[in-house]
Amino acid sequence: MENTTSVHEQVKEYYGHTLQTKDDLKSNCCTAAEPPAHYKPILSLIEDEIMTRFYGCGSPFPDALEGLTVLDLGCGTGRDCYLLSALVGQEGKVIGIDMTDEQLEVARKYQEVMAQKFGHDEPNTKFIKGYIENLKEVGIEDASIDLVVSNCVVNLASDKEAVMREVLRVLKPGGEVYFSDIYADRRIPEHLVENEIFYGECLGGALYREDFRRLMNKLGVPDIRTINQSIVTIENPQIQELAGNIKFHSELIRIFKLDNLEDLCEDFGQIAIYKGTISHAKHVFHLDDHHIFYTNQPMLVCGNTASMIQNTRFSKHFDILGDRSQHFGVFDCKDSSSPINESARGACC
Image (cartoon, rainbow, N blue to C red; front, side, top):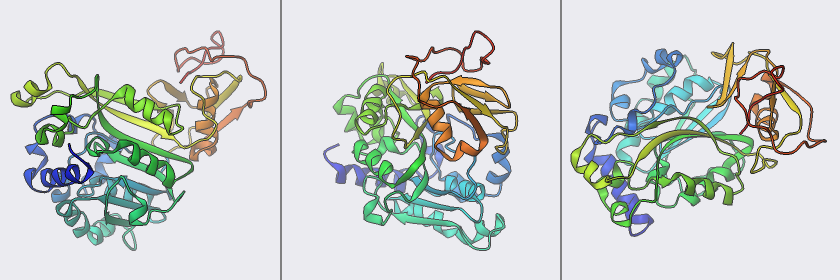
């Protein structure tokens, strides 16, 4: 890809004209994760045209969303925006940004209809044409967003650093990034980056996962949490031939905007107790793929995990015992489900 402008034009052409429905995709990167079962009644209300022209690869819908202001990067036809619209409720707000006119036309067409289906007095959705590398240009103000989500879109951006810098700018302190994307097990050769179909299929722009970690560390985010991941298979022989030995996976990631995170799990003797007060998570809450909190069961946690609970919207759902006044060294990483009365084991980052 020669420059940002050419990438934008090629992606708009691919998603505005080349693809007409999700069945036109040549890889399965957009079917990696099914939304939880309790979202299915909401999804059943979403208009068919929105669903058939949606190309997301995961399920970027965290818990405890009531009343939040959410920004969806690369919203496409708005499937995720409308699901989020129901989850945040009438008091919440969902902003979708996309650069493709054909996708936005579908999203905007159903705003009134979807508001009525969800029982809202008026639409709580807004769809903006713009580029995710420059959210300031479309009026997204500093520290104005509670949650940023994205569904298999960041890989399509030519400047991933600009995207993530903008995301951190618009997030409130304690805000969250929760997104699905495609990653590779190595850096993609330039000739594949420049291949329009390979890029449009969310493969050519996929970051080497370690380079993403380094990028976020550069931007001041030393701790990235994985929710789940799955292997991407390529069924089209021509695309598979291009990929060769490169392996891809779809990953759902959680990042918090916190200023006290460290690059290692540090032990301050803190204990977290989940109260079981989050909707649809009465008995267990998954912070990530290895931090699993069972209701009323005390668990030793590292300083980063304690901060992710105590200094975010999840604080009211937990009791945190202890602070950072005394340091005990590197946190002893063990299985996250271990209660503190089993050799004082706990979770780690």
